[in-house]
Structure formats: C-alpha cells, structure tokens
Image (cartoon, rainbow over all chains, first blue to last red; front, side):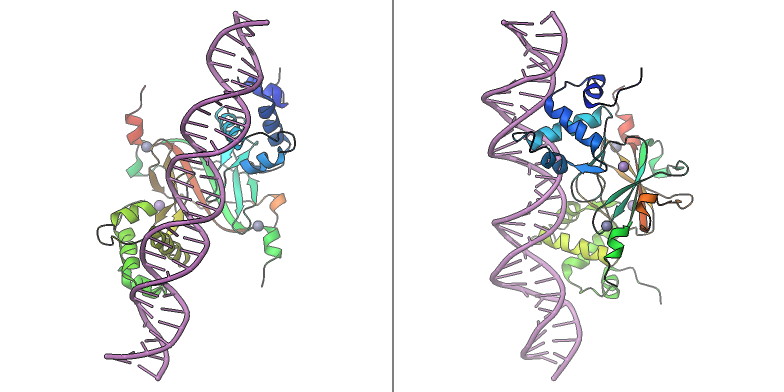
Length: 142
Length: 142
DNA sequence: ACCTAGATGAGAACGATTCTAAACTACAAC
DNA sequence: GTTGTAGTTTAGAATCGTTCTCATCTAGGT
Ligand SMILES: [Mn+2]
Ligand SMILES: [Mn+2]
Ligand SMILES: [Zn+2]
Ligand SMILES: [Zn+2]
C-alpha cells in the first residue's frame, strides 16, 4: 500500500485531523508549482474560505512542517516559503525579485565540523545560491 | 600600502564619512568575536552613546554591508547577524539556541543550474548547516 | 447523539526592520 | 577659519511577518 497523494489521506496518515481548511491548504500546496508564502495560500483561498484566519494558515503550515509533509524555507528577509517538495534539495534565489528555483547537489556535501564546534551534531543543511534570475537579467538596464 | 585595520581608515578607504557612531559600530564588530545582531551592537554601545538610535545602527550596518566591510547573515527567524569575516565561508546553526559557528568548505561547491533556471547568474552561495551544538547536546534531557 | 481534545477566527501583541522629517555635522570649497 | 550642503543622526511612527489569546466551534471517537 503506497502512501496516497490526496490531501485527505496524507492528513490522516500523518495523524492530523481533517478539517476543510487543512485539506484546502495542503491541496493548494500540492497543486501549486513553487514555493508559496502564507499570504499566497491565504489569498488564494479567500474565495472558498472567506472567513479563514491567517492564523489558521500559520497553524496549518506549522503542523504540516512538523509531520514532514512540507518544508519551510526562509531566505533572508520577507515571508517564509513552504515547499511541498520534501526531498533534500537546495535553492537558487534571485536577489532582485526573490524568485526561487530548486536545485540538487551532484554529490552530498562533506561538512567538516571545526574545532570550536567539536561535537556539533549535524541534522541537515541547505544551500542558498544567490544571483540574478534569467527574467531579471533580461530587464537589466545595461 | 596595506589596507589598515582600524575603523577610521577602513571607513575612509570605503568612501564613507567618519562619524563617532560609525567608528564605534565598526570597531565593535572588529573586536567582537562572533556574529552580532543589531541589538548586540546597540546595547553594547549604550554607555558610550546613550542617545544613539537603533536606526543609526541599522543604517550603518547596511552601509558597511554595501561596501563589503561586513556580511549580513540571516538564518531563519530572529534578527540578522553581522559578520566581520567577509571571506567566503559558511555556518553551523544550532537549532536549539541559535549559536553560529563558522565553517569552510574543503572544496568549492559545484552548482549546476537546472533547466528551468537556465541563464541564472550565480553571484555567491551560503551553506547553512543545522544541528545541535555541543553545549545544547550536554544539557539534553535523555 | 454526545463529549471533548483539538481547531478555528478575530484581533491584539510582538519583534525586527524601515520610514519620516526635523535637527545636526563631516568635510570640501572658499 | 568660515561657510554651505549633502549626508547623518535621532525619536518616534509605521510596516511587515508572525505569534498569541481566548471565545467559539467541530472532528472524530465512544
Ligand atoms: Mn524547493
Ligand atoms: Mn561567520
Ligand atoms: Zn529575478
Ligand atoms: Zn545550541
């Protein structure tokens, strides 16, 4: 029995209660092709859930993160983004427009813990590559 | 002629006006062994500059960043940290207490830009290694 | 059908950062 | 040394993302 991909089953498998809001938020992230902010989610669901609170979105994405259904990525300033792609991967960030692109390392990183952090227990790592995205490069005044 | 290391000359070389506040902020960062927040700086200089505004600290670290005298590092939530070590290097972050440790990659990262970001111009990258620092590990309830 | 742990919603509160506008000052030009 | 002015500082308000509070509501087990 493979883990099903629809929101309701994913929530149940994770031991979370199935509420209409949660289902909609998770489904939105499943459908969304990218890295959504809380506001992206909130705004997109306004029509269907006019009375849903931003708190609900925050609460939900936090729980989805805790059970590993999404991954929070915070790049510098601005709002956190939520990634339905929970495989280990990294990001290119456009310093002009904030656009985010996935990228995968060809080989895992060798982290050598320095002396002054002797005993540091590595959990995971994230590479943030900064630069100019193709779109912004085109618009460049040169 | 080597670039001098005292705050006044560094500011002049960078083409910034030398004000007492700027000198003190830069000197603080030069002396500080670590990754200071705006509040660290602000609080530490309260005695000498009782009327200095936090805005001044923000303005100053922003300018120091712009001329490359310090590097801003924003790890997830909380306040940005300012690093007087501007050589390319990366950080271990303790997910418990927020402590930051420098680390250097043994060899530069090979970034292969994915198809959907074709043409992305890489400027630099930063690796954030998350885990538990030795101090927090000791205090662990196990 | 009922009960209750857990979820939701509205708004207040919060912490980090930016903005505003008036007073001040570094420093270049005379 | 005096002056002019562009850049700097300051206090406080404003903004933004996020968390908190607490009263109301509901999912899901019994
Ligand atoms: Mn991603
Ligand atoms: Mn560092
Ligand atoms: Zn861009
Ligand atoms: Zn720690």
